[in-house]
Length: 151
Image 1 (tube, rainbow, N blue to C red):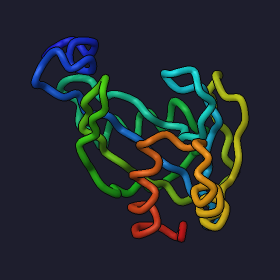
Image 2 (image 1 turned 90 degrees about the horizontal axis):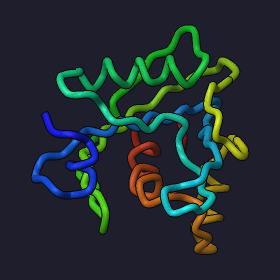
Image 3 (image 1 turned 180 degrees about the vertical axis):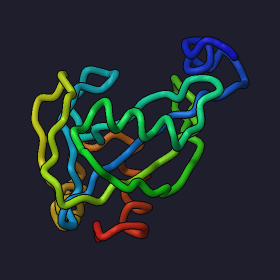
């Protein structure tokens, strides 16, 4: 029960859980171009939120999806969890995936662009070493390929 600012800035040994949810439609990954914490434009998932103290991670993920994506009915699956740490933060990341045939409409306001990405497009971009994906996305892509139709 510590303030997120204390935990995220590594002033404590505690870790706040972070939920990240990917949406896959017809074998393609839906991503949004946003500004990251360093001011860079990157492609990232639409749902990336901290879980409040005492909340169930899975239930929180479903609530975050309903707040950010206009999907009436969806099934969400757990993909993986891992510890993420960089020079400024330490997080316990829970990754979920939604596969849908429904049109994707988001309520996100700070989006520069949105796109459906095939695995081939992502591999091609990564082979050219363009820094279009944040570190978390790079870590999570391999798990998405294993647990979904995104391959």
